[in-house]
Image (cartoon, rainbow, N blue to C red; front, side, top):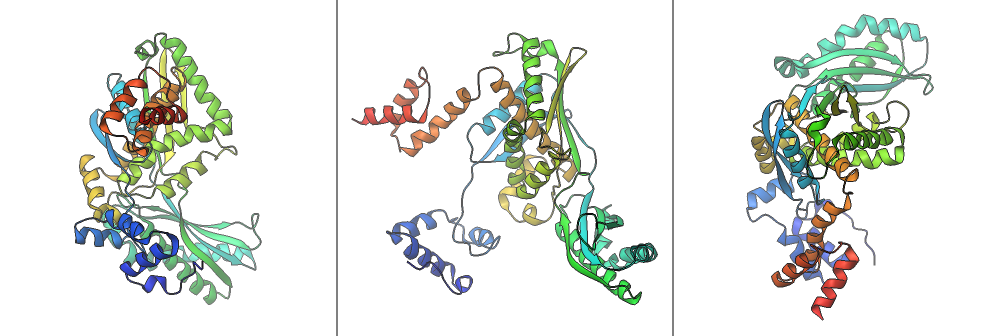
Length: 432
């Protein structure tokens, strides 16, 4: 079988689907039906989705749920979450309800600075390059005035531009390191447009001065260590009491130790932080933001001290339990999918049309809530009890159980430990 194809992008949507169905499936008609079953019945809406990316053939649905009762900075929020993993929305909701009676979540945006760089090489006297840069620095701002005008009217724009000598890293390597404020937009296009103009200005001015630079590339950085938000919860230790916490002092100490393990042990830290990102990514995706950029930035931040470590921290001080995290988040609430995708717009409505700063706070809180739920389970009942109850539905659906079978399966596993093999065995015996 030859799976190579020429001119695929020029084929119509129907032709692309026909080629895939015939090339990869023994039953092409069945494959075509599956693909078409996930089209939206509204042709205009489907066309909108088709045009988000290239070579679109259908839609891959991810469940969109909501976690209510989040008390954030004194205001209740219902948080939309797009995720396929069971237990995540339930855990977030449980944490929200738990902390709503203990003062709620506090969230603060520490800074919103974003970064872009022009990477170039220079052979010659570095002092001459530095002197020229200081002389022409105002021109970088004036040459980008047409690009920055609208952003400046919204209170954003270019914050600063620096020349950085990076020859300790690579031979002849220099960069223009620029910082930006993009207000409620993520600002990728704005930053990249500014950077490309910086590169043009740099080439023109160095050539006029008899200096030779070679621009390698101009691109924003998704690492935003100065675009930080903090989320935290705190209460007196004795207030931690609930169904699974009969000894709040013991629970608090075990909880803090669990966080300390994640701070010290990278193998644990990766799983610990993955749990945080369950909450973060679900909200980022639901609000039309770039979760891949967020993931890359967050994990780089987790390694900022030279070893991968926990993003969250906990302490007991003067009888007060405090749990918090600080993470970098470059988010937008205008532009991109936020103004195109109907469900993204709906999710932002549910969040009461937040600014980018407010969205940063909400996303950080979702991550902290998710982390609290996981650590509470790990240090009390264990993580699998609740997770496997949620997973039971997935197994039942996988085997296309009837309503009668579903009732019998759930009744049986109320008193029996849940595992995939145990559920499969029970279903098989049931059907015999």
